Image (cartoon, rainbow, N blue to C red; front, side, top):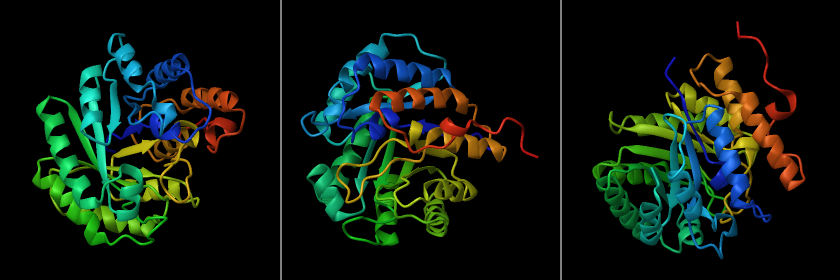
Length: 303
């Protein structure tokens, strides 16, 4: 089985919609515990306007603190940027790996970034090239790749055109994000198959939300389609505040349990991640959507 990478996005995508601000020290504790659980790619935050997304107000400080602290071997801290100013901030405070993207929905693009698809694409491509030239890792994404809560179905050709723009610019790590949670397993299989056929250099990542209860099924379909990089959030936290119906991400510990039961080399302790989820549930004072943090993982190897 191929080695699977799980990119933990709970500190960013998981928290961005929460009204109750998580203190910086607690965030740092969660990051340390997630790294100790075996997660090697952790998204720390996004470089956005703190008035619009207050949970991300301490992103620069988090990166400065993490950059000056010893970390477990192989751990990479990523940050999301939407514009050139965000990239400048990220470069200044020690981001290892930049995530940036373009929505395949005109409406979602304008609500999320204030730009249409064409303008956003040109700027993101230039930013990705600048980050790569600075020696940083770069992942570009197509958001709303499987459908939009405002516009409905998104044409496959539009998604593929965006991926081609990225590839033509030398940006070969690409994520397809189901921002609205509209994907179904057959669609996932078909779209990742079409994307894979574009260029053998491509590294594919998937990002699913569980808005309509299909998140884990879609992750399984992506795995069957050859995807080996997944974005998820501990406890199933999250939701884009600029989509029509916001709902949580695929739950990290549930995804780890699924992939491990199928024999994938994940290297992550689902029980340890669950302890972070339990802490988050206590902090927010409500149950979180995931399952394994309540049931525990199946304790014996799959047949």
